[in-house]
Image 1 (tube, rainbow, N blue to C red):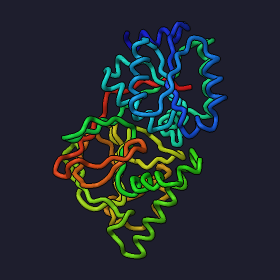
Image 2: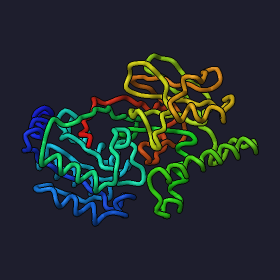
Image 3: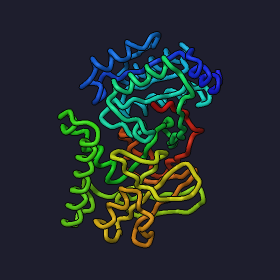
Amino acid sequence: MTLQARIDRLKSGTAKTGCLLNPMGGQVRKRKPAIRQALDDIPGMLVCEANDAITFKSAVDQLLQADIDLLVIVAGDGTTHAIFGHLFAARAPADWPLITIIPGGTTNMTPLDLGVRGKPEQIIQRLHAYLRRPSAPKLAQRPVLRIEQAGMNPIYGMFFAVGLVARGVKFSRSPVKQIGITGGIFTAMIMLRSLIGMLANMILGRQQSEWAPVNMTLTEASGRIHQGTYLFALVSALDCLLLNIRPYWGTEPAPLHVTLVDQQHKRLWRSVWPILSGGGAVLQEKDGYYSHNTGSLSVHMDDEYIVDGELYRSVNPQAPINITATDPVTFLVL
């Protein structure tokens, strides 16, 4: 079935809906009875619960076989990342159901970028109200990052990062995550810990530690090469990140946002706010700050990186990690 046919079925009130719910998501664990009740109130919705790689795949397969028109994901970034991987392995985006993501995890960048706000059960109730009185749906499109390296299967996600950001995510796997803090407060804690780690390195003159910058070579689609040691590098198909952070200021008409902060930066503390708020256009490349939009890029490094909060490591420092943009995925925005 074509995408337009699925949209038409939404408009007419005849769409088939399915949901993948991760009961272990940070928000879901806190609010599962209310979330489950809101889902049960939607007539005919097929709900699958899954919380690991095996059950994610079987749930995606079951929902696709049911030929649903709308896939509702109630989970966080990590689960959405895993679901995208299974969807891309099964079908081209043009053959997917429409997607709506309800923030149910510890971090929820994609729905927040799409403008989805509110408690999970409240958003599900908005979906129920829309399905009872359908109209022209509000849709948004975003490409997804396809990340490939020889010796590994393709990885799909919305956000790639190395350096201090990856170190912060690794820190988040420590007992801090077991406290039960989610959302913006959790993100702020990770950012603060990253900044403290960076400051400690600068004061003590340490370069090789758990908070060390990343050595890498990044090559853009244009052929331009960036080589050196960077505090962090970000690549995303999202316009904003958690806490409404907008660390990109490139103006080129290309789908991937790239930002680099060199270790040899100048006036870092005065630059933090422009980087976070989207005002980075005032920063200069000669001072160690660079942001650009591109269609693809490659990275050579021997280090860890994250994709949507999941931690990976380069397989072979001699082989590039290639990042490209997929065809856009269509989201229903509630």
